[in-house]
Structures are given as structure tokens and as C-alpha cells.
Image (spheres, each protein chain N blue to C red):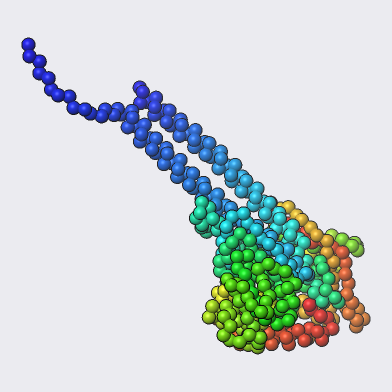
Length: 321
Length: 166
């Protein structure tokens, strides 16, 4: 008897049950990982949105407006970027804050933003750090328009070099740790702020304030200001943020002028003489809100009108503000 | 048979994890809602303490020297007339702002203020619509009175009530 033996080849026998289990297992794992990533992302967005809103609530005490020179420290547990955005559309415009925080060594970018029509924050477009130092100053033009808020990261040191006496006094009174007032030499790595009346043109200044021309030169760009509140604003913020916020301040000035004009008309019905011309201030402030760039002449002409209106108010029988 | 058992098992495992995930998400989102409500409340409480000093309400130097928590009645009535711009912009981020006179009280203490009856009234609804939780702060409500050719400053005790959705 002859037996025919064919050589057996080694072969991997995978049953259908195994293939099915692997495919479905992979699918379940994919869904689980995808959902986990989504949940983490949603969590990051939630944290950023909450931080944005919280910052706004924390800034409220700065707007009490009765005390000046209040400094608050915003401390966050992780490295944070605060995006300062400004929208000048509408009757008041909007202050927009977007917060992104470092998570697993990458910046968790978010589209969630917190917007406030009644706040004016002056800072660079993006401030980064764990501690943010914030102080405020009332902006009066001629009546109080708002408390403007200045926000800087504690990583940035501003050195005011040979500042005029009144500015020196004010800054020293703040006791803000990242603002230095020096008359001999500024530390390296600090942002040197000079005043053209006390320092020559070639002194290695990062920011130069010309009080005669009411201008601030920063990174080769020139911006104009009126009042000390706007001078600090120009120092601590970049051009785009500054000009947009000034437009918003002018919008509020216009609305407040109309409000005071309405009050004037109510008082005149009661018998108080009618002397303050607020319509001219409203239209002057409105002219700035419509211009594409902010020139020195624009602000100067509103300041002149504001000064005239203020003198009329001081002389009035029923003062409006 | 075995395949059928495995398929059912896998479906059961998937459904189980989906339910656990949904449960976790519900907890996470309810926490988020609670945080949002806490933030709203914090904002309203701080707003109540500072609103009287904001440019639209404050007395400034109109009644002599500057004082804290002093609201200009005449200015508030003017604001009431042009409130639409402010409410459309969601300017204060709250649903209702009201001022209620506390002292001296009189027959008109419950009367809603309008341009026709002011100052003989007791309640000023600045932002009228809206329901929610209210927080309040005491203020001084001052106005100008013109009597016999003389201007007088009249100040009364009142409270400002802010209502937020929470």
C-alpha cells in the first residue's frame, strides 16, 4: 500500500471570531480616544472661558472710581496668554478678552471670548505670564468718562527713566513691582521709557514720550494722547489696541455728552438757566469715532471743545457734573 | 453561536461605556453651569457696589463736593429716556436695574417715576425688563430743586437693586 504524503505548509489560522473582535475592538478604542480628546478640549475651552469671565469680574473693583492708584494682581495657576481685542463698532464698541492656557506644554487655543461694552483695558495685544499686574486711572474729558485699566504681565519690567516729578510721584505711589522709576540707569531686559524733555534723542529708549507734542513713540510708531490717563495707555499698549480703545472712549464721551444734554434740558424745565453747549462736544467726539486713524489734531480739537464745555459748566448755576 | 454571543457582549460593553461617558459629561456640564451662575452672581454683587459711582449714575461735583455712592436723580431720569442704546449693547450685563427710595417715605413711595411725575415718585426702573435674582446697595439719591429763584440740592436715601439671571 502506498500512501501519498503531501508536505504540510505552516499557516496562520485566524478564525472569523478573532477578526470580528479585532475590528470591533479597534472601533471601540477609536471612539473612546476620540471622545476623550473632545472632552479634554471642551474642558480647556471651558477653563479659558471661565478665566476670561473671572478676569472681568476681578476688574470690577478697579472701576469704583473714588480711589485712584489701586493695583491688583491677577495670579493664575498655569502659564496664560490674555488676548486683548477691541471692537469699535456699535454705540459703545466692545472690550474682548480671550484667554488661552498652557496644557501639556501646548497652548490650548480657544474661540470662546468674553466681551464687555463698559470696560477699557490697555495692554499689548497678547500679554503672557502667570501674574498680571493691573491698575486704573479715571479718564475725564471733561466729565468722568470711564476708569481706564492698564494691564501688564509681571514678566515685563517698565523702567521710567528720568520721569518728570509728578509722574515719578504717581508711579512710586502705585508701588507696582514691574514699574521702576530710575534716574541713573535702567536694568537690562527692561523696557526703557524716556521723556524727551529730560532725555536726549539717542539714549537707547524703547518708548519715548513727548509731552510738548502729546505723543508717544513706541516700536517706531507714533500715537497721540490728551490727559495723563491716555499717556499711560499709549505707553502700555500697542498702537492697534490704543487707537481702537480711544475711539471707544470717544463713543462713550459722545453718549455721555448727550446724556448730560438731556439732563440740562430737564433742569432748564425746572428753571435752571441753559448755558452748557454739549451738542458741540458730542459731535466733536463723534468725528473721531468715524476717522480711520487717530491724528494729533483730531484729539486736540476734542480736548479744546471739552475744555470750553468744562468752563461753561463751572460757571453754570446748576452744574451738570 | 459563539460569534453571536461575542457581538452581544461587545454591544453591551459599548453601550455601558457610552452611558458612563454621558454620566461624566452631565456632571462636568452641571459644574460648568454652576460656575457660570457663581460668576454671574459675583459680577452682579460687584456691579451693585460700583454702579452708583459709574459715569452714567454718579453725582460728581454737581451737588457740592464729590461723594461715594451718590446717584444723580436728574441724570438717571435723562438716562431712562435714552436707555435703549445701553440695553441693546448689554452695557452692564444685567437684566434689570431699579432704584427704590427708602427715606423719606410718602404717599408717592410706590409710584413708578416717569418724566411727567418725577420727583414725586418712589421707584425708578432704569432697565425695566428681566427676572432673576436681585442684589442691592444703599445709595444717596440727589436732585436739584429750583425754589423761589434759588437752586437747592435735595438728597434722599435709596437703594439700587440689580437683577441678574441666575
